[in-house]
Image (cartoon, rainbow, N blue to C red; front, side):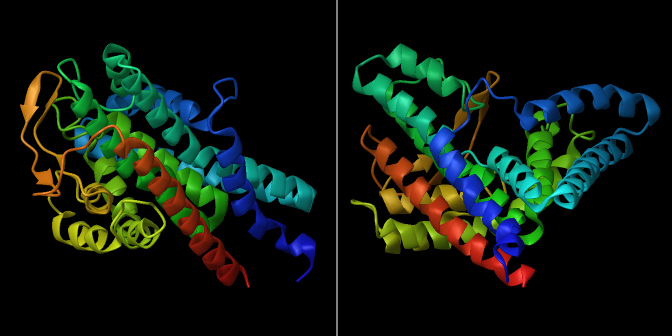
Length: 321
C-alpha cells in the first residue's frame, strides 16, 4: 500500500490531533451550527406538509440525517477524485469538526478555575452553558458534580460515538451521527411540542449510541489505571451494574463508569425548566464530588478518547484493507 493509498486512513488521527490542538475556536465556521439552522428551517415545513406529528417528525429526521450523509459523501468523493491530498484534507477537516474532547475539557477546567478562586456565581453561569438543568440554587459541590457528569456523558457524544462511526464509514457517517445527536438535542424532548414530532429522532439517537456507550465502560476502565486516584475495578463494576439506572438508555453507562473510577456519587433529582425530575443516584455509597475530581475527570476523558482513537484507527485500517 502506497502513502497515497494510506491517506484516507491517516485522516482520522490527523483530525483527532487537530481537535487536541485547536479545540473549537469560535472564529471558525462550524457544521453543527449549520445543522441547527437546517433543523430550525425544516421543522415548520415538515409540520405543514404532514398532518400526523409522528410521521412528520420521522420523515423530518430521516431526511436530514440521510441528506447530511449523502451530501458529505458526495463532496468527499469529489474531493478525492480531484486529488487524494485534497480528499485527505477535506476528510480531516470534517472529522475534526466531529470531535470535541479539548473544548469539553476546556469548559470543565474553566469552571474548575472559577470554583478554585471562590467565584461560585461565575462558575454557576459557566455550568449553565453546558448542562440543560436549572442551576440557580447550585453551590460549589453541586456545580462540581454537574461538571463531572457532563464530562462523563459527553465523552460518548463528543468523542467515542463519532470515532465509532468514523471507523465504520469515514467522515460522512461520523457527520451523519453529529446530525443525529444535534436533532436529539433540539427536538428529542418529552414535552407537548416534541413528544410525537421528536420521537423518531430521539429513538435514532438511542440506537446510534447503544454500542459506543457500552464500549465506553471498557475504555474508561482500562484508562482508569493511568489516572491517579481512579479505580479500574470500580469503573467496571459500577458501569455495568448501575449504567442502566438512568432516564437515558445510554448516558448512564459512561456516567456510572466515571462514578466508579472516580469513587463518587453522581445523578440524583434535578430541576428542569422549574420541574423536579426524580433521577436515581449512580455510584451509591461512594463519596461526594469535590473540586479535585474535575481535572481528574478531564484526564480520564482525554485518555479514554485517545484509547478510543487507537481502537477506531485500527478498525478503520482493517476495514479498508
